[in-house]
Image (cartoon, rainbow, N blue to C red; front, side, top):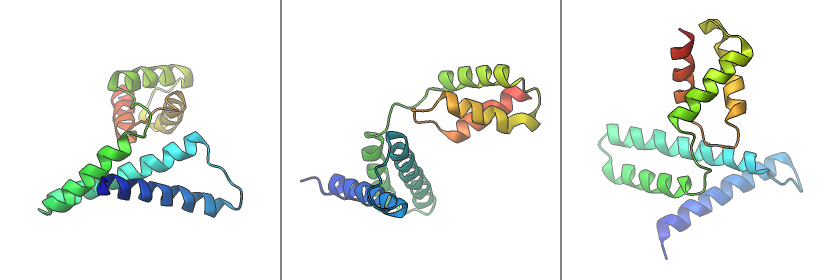
Length: 133
């Protein structure tokens, strides 16, 4: 048995069950909701990995990295930088945004275009800022 994989998948199952329990009896999560939960877990692992690496805790950093790799296997394909740039350009055209003040509108439209894919919000934000300046 792969104990690390088993532990990671049990953690995912627990996170999904917790979310279902919060919503009430008989609730079934949609694929988008499951993807959102998985993305949250991935983000937590990335943050932990950075913290452990910065503090010299290599054994814990390796464990987080291992869990991160396992979690990413279950996520939809990530949007590439080119796909993000294209979606941002289209969103700017559709919203008519011309200044950084309208960044929220562009972000919302871009994220809607990229729905169903794993998207790094920081990368989208940076791309929007660059294109609106």
